[in-house]
Image 1: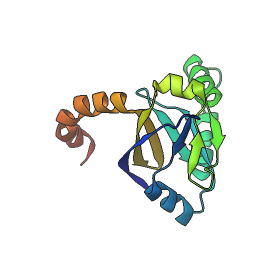
Image 2: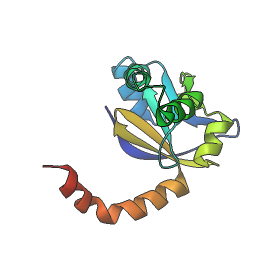
Image 3: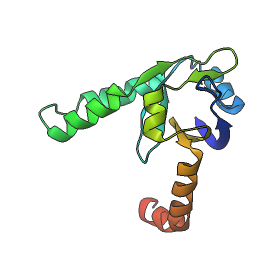
Amino acid sequence: MFYGEYLHSIDRKGRLILPAKIREVAKANFVEKFFITRGLDKCLFMFSEEEWRMQESKFKAMSFTKFESRTFNRLYFSGAVEVAPDKQGRILLPSYLKDFAEIKKEVVIVGVSNRIEIWAKDKWQEFYSSARPSFEEISEKLID
């Protein structure tokens, strides 16, 4: 549903303007609000409400008697925040999430099908530079 890579910046009030293409896709799919939480690889994950509920069901099904499950769920859900873009398509990123992802000013917003990732520009560039050379090798292992 969400695709592409977009360079944006955080305004002085800590808001992020969602790319027009993402707003168009959200509108076409009746997405009015999103959930943002700590992601993996030092980025933030942003889900539509529908996708968030599906992910939530999976994680709630994990056994709370297992240390790894408790730890993951605590970190994942304690970081979650519900956001609804304003009329200009802006969302407010809480400071604890910006701190987690080391976001200062410039961000890269990446559509990854069922989620959106929000990266500090320098962290995205580091990830991309290190991962890009092995793209073909990884694809051979994952895709039949």
